[in-house]
Image (spheres, rainbow, N blue to C red):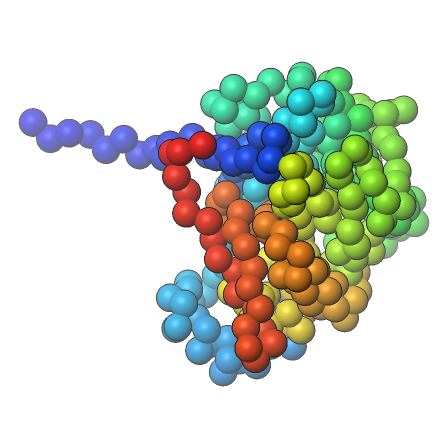
Amino acid sequence: MVAALQNQQNAGWYRFRIGDLECTSVWDGYIHHSYDGLFPNADPEEMARLKAEYRLPIDYIPMDLNPVVVNMGDRLVLIDAGMGQYSDMFGDKMGRLLENMAAAGLDPADIDVVLMTHLHPDHSFGLRRPDMSAAFPNAEIHVSRQDWEEWTDAENLTRSDHKKAWTEGTLEALKPYEGKVKTFEIGVEVLPGVTSVSAAGHSSGQSAFVFESKGEKVMFTGDLAHHQVYDPIHPEWYFHMDFDSDPALGAQAKRDVFEKVCAEGIRYHGYHFPFPGLGDLTKEADGTFRFHLEPVTPRL
């Protein structure tokens, strides 16, 4: 007898601890992104060298989407909400957050706070369900004032570039949370034990979040960096001239955050890094950085 192929992978969730905090990285899927437009100021020969040395795909970048749920004891916090189940704006490989939360034993109705690193579609569209209801009906949405102002600006709706569709989608995703959105200034403590750090550039008000418990820290960095090899080795490389609100500022933010996490021994979580996105950065003698993905283990 020939056995049928299973043709499915194990559920996309992974738990880790930061002191007393229980964190669950929940896979929303991935973007199958070509190199077109990416890293526009990169040296082509250097990029080719890194592709060969690190055995990277030649013609595309698979960018995972890794929202994280943090159980803080007194509240359940979600960091970013994925792409949602109704939009194929960035392809059809996303929208897995809710099913993987269920597999991990997490109820969307139990989420108290959604911390938004920024409001780009692959982070914010998952705030609502296809029927327009709130995916997290009991949650408040926390987003930096600067990012809120950029991505809810009605003037974007008159543009002819991507900002029009992105803003339309963001406004629709936020509609079920009317009266439940709170803005903060970057650099403040947004929740007890959670501090915001500027990651601005890719989005004008992008914020990273440092969670601390019992002397241990992890930083959830959103789209500060998009690739686990190119960005640490070449933080000066822009991500995209069109999709970055300020490419030069974004490059500087990468270096500043990389320096901070290395100097302070903070674990690093990259939203678009290979699932589950967790690891640590080291600074090399030549001033560049390396990301070391933590091995996935069944031990907790």
